[in-house]
Length: 103
Length: 280
Image (tube, rainbow over all chains, first blue to last red; front, top):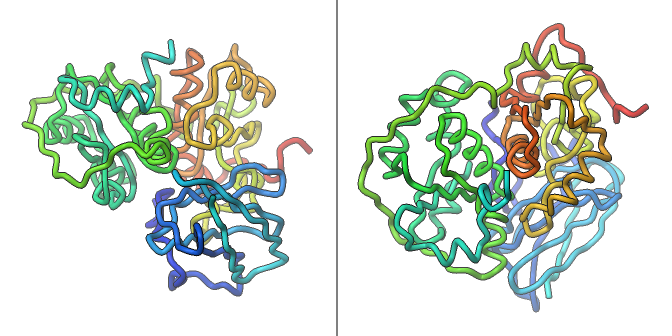
């Protein structure tokens, strides 16, 4: 058993101390509606074939974060007020900033 | 097994919040979700502190399960409706666990917290307390639980269903993509396992797909309905979700959950490990 299971790690823009963005592909960003951050949205990471990979709940500030691998990804957000998605291609390790608007 | 016996809809749940004998239980790994707002009247169970042994890698024993349910005010005759975050992963794990200890009247809330929230249904921060009971559990039903030796013996013999994401199955990732990838054990999967990610069984809103869709998904993936099946993932909670689908929704007879899963198997010395898609 590791300290972090499969639950919902805290979402935020500050990376955990044990994460090295020089080695990992980190996809991070904010869910918004009409320019305002949307907390409590279900943010889904889909791979290049559209297959579900992971899901987190956005923080009160609308923040989310995924640890992925190089490749093309879709980030899709669901909220009771609407849905939205954005695409990103990560060529290698590093921090990728994303914005997802729901409507 | 009919779907109505093992699943309730969000609408049924909202209509039965005050029904005597129905107890709603939220199960999460991170109980801050419950504390921030839960279904009215629901009690909380913490997947880690309530259901896992604090020292050994195992879950609480029969006496521990009895004292947990007694303290939560759940009686042997109560109809327990489980729900949680993460598309009901931990709720499905708890469901498996209730069955393991012989509680028959247990159901999952279809879609869990996600569907409830997306529907805009009521959540409350009210404290919930129920009078304590004297719950009696059965011995573990080991026809539902697989251990490592049985898993090794099942290679090329039984259906092994790896329900992790394709990248975890192939060995590209060691953990789901919302978690840091720091684990040290070997990556890959158990030889002869088929990869059917748990998420195939769920709609976007967290509800289960229809029986017809589910039958097609596992059939196309090569699951042989005439054989026994063992499901596994990384720590045994996503595979509880698939165990629920195969045994409780589709009615397959001999389905076990391997709760040791990849964090155990991928650390064993001397067992075979396969990399890649398994189809090469």
